[in-house]
Image (cartoon, rainbow, N blue to C red):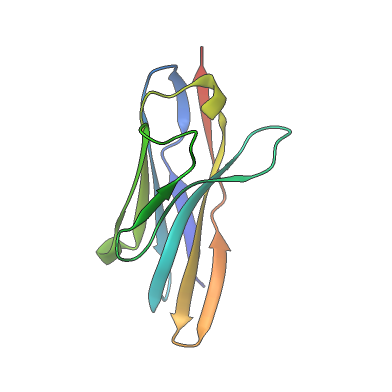
Length: 120
């Protein structure tokens, strides 16, 4: 069974930094796009950043210049480096990926979420 396991959330003061990690475990044939989403209380889940297997990236306007997404394909891991954090970044952050567990078997998977809290 393939799973996404996140780590790295926590409490930080405004202006601080955190680094989130998400590793895909299990039998994996290939991983295409890996994403980070977040959901704040009372709000819809939103895409924060995405990265393809080739390293192309995309960011929400609200995090451009502050967050950096990267991945290590050999380790099936995606990272989110978050700098200059603001109270508005407070949310549960979720890892998401479309994973081929076999050549013709794609699964869209979510991690369990990790809480990021930014105090003012």
